[in-house]
Amino acid sequence: MTRGRIGRGSAPLAARNAGEPRLRRWARRMGESCGPPPHSRSPRSPALQIGAPKGTDEARIAVEIRNALLYDFTGGGYAAPPTHRLKIAISSTRASIIVDVNTSRPDVENYGLNATYTLTEIATGKIVVTGTTFARVSYDIPGQEQRYARVRGLRDAELRAARVVADNIRSRLSSYFIAGT
Image (tube, rainbow, N blue to C red; front, side, top):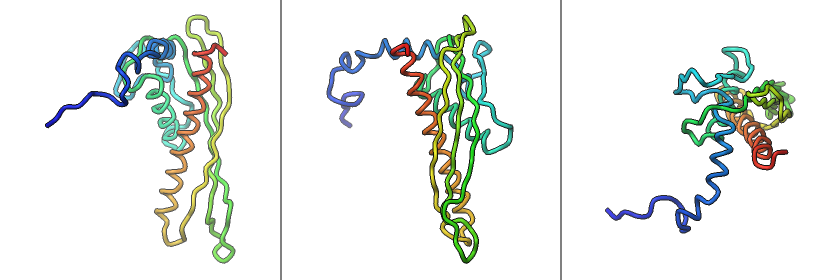
């Protein structure tokens, strides 16, 4: 078995990690602001959850958004003690776009996810960033005989929308931590 170089790309390790200190500072500032990783029960972490009623589809979507943000901010590892707290509220919508005239069943539906978020500095309690974001995704319903396909299409649409919302929030918070705006 031949052993190759660890890592991707052909650039030396020092060149690839040139921006790492800035990213580490950013991750340290964010800390565990969305709550601890799912496997962590650390008492020092502010376990702030995304507001959604328990046992609903929105609660599952909230977990997807939270996990995506945690992974984006920490890279899957543990973070330093948090300096900011992120609070997110979500709501979802569904609308039938195309309805079959013969059966009155939808052929195409649109799923929408709206999120409002606030980033608060823990030390001062000052709100430093507020914003809203949304995602609209469509999904097909192949026919009335394929009920599982409709449920699976909706679930996939929910996951896609959650990822878009998480990416939008991450981008906005990145601009705050990197540029200060």
